[in-house]
Amino acid sequence: MNLNESLLLINEKVRSLKKYHLEPEISSIKLNQNENPFDWPMEIKKEIAQFCVSRPWNRYPNFVPDQLQEKLSQYTKVPKSGILVGNGSNEMLLVLLLSLANTARNVIICQPTFTVYRLLATGLGATERSVGLNADLTFNIPDIVSCSKQYPGSVLILCSPNNPTGSVLSESDVKTILAEHNGFCILDQAYIEFGGYNAIELLDKFPNLIITRTFSKAFGGAGLRLGYMLGNPEIVSQINKIKLPYNVNFFSEHVAQTLLSHTSTVEKQVEFLINQRDDLLSFLNSLPLDNVYPSSANFIMFRCREKQALFDNCKQNGILIRDVSSYPLCENCLRVNVGTEQENSAFKKVLKNFFA
Image 1 (cartoon, rainbow, N blue to C red):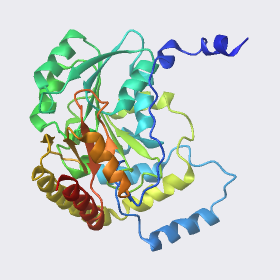
Image 2: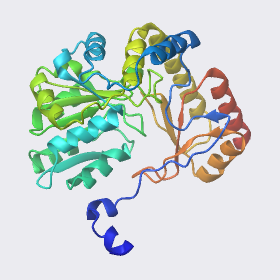
Image 3: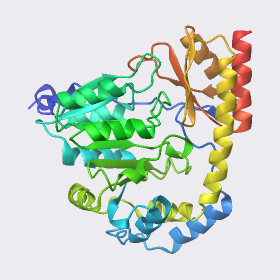
Image 4: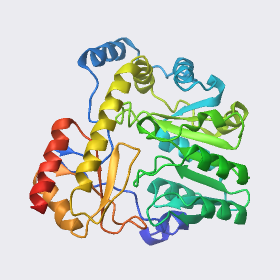
């Protein structure tokens, strides 16, 4: 069998996908991946390192990370039995779509949004049904409800705050959608610590609602690859059947428990980043940009007809931001995440000089 014949044996849906890829680049200021710019204190790292030295590496991690689930339960106020932990919220999305989507199902996605939703849905053989955001890139609630009614039993994926736009669903929006939608609704709240409606209170009323969250953003744990889902305990118990065993390594499990013991540190950083975000938003609105979109996340998207020149200029000055112009409705758009005060000042200086 030759190479071409072998390639043809790969799922046609997978072969048709455009790969999700970010070219690795080195820069002194990194504002392109929505990370928390603050690393964890050295004393906490040393404490964790000591645990890793003493813990046998030849033994499997806990089959069920009970202690981590207990700490997450205390943090989220969701029963431990309604929590599932995984290798990043991306794995939780994969497990959910493995459980909920098949060739007979439709997956409704509000575009533009996180690219991975479409990759997973299409790769698993589901049919994507796109609902566009409004012209101002806010959520189009009537269209979401209409699409939901047109494709009953579909899986609806919502991201709030939404990546890359920063727009959010209000409490009224979420309740309106759930009241009409008769399939599962996956609500990705990776950036919820920075703003927007926290929908946890709706889990008891709507068993078809599942929330995904992550340690990668506000908790400053992007290198851990740890996320979790929240839902009705009976629903989570069923979804747990398709999750791979031992999917969380002992290091990530222990680090996550440690981070959850220092939530006051996270809260102070989040408060700082929100203030910096609002300041950066005011600054961007003072520039001759085509549009600056309000954000409830730790990033801001803006539209600039000189998009490529501005992107290149930032890069030449040692600052990486994200070109999101290939997303639907995002022509000439760039996205910058909030950094430290010094990083934000450097970014502002580059933009001032560019438009001078």
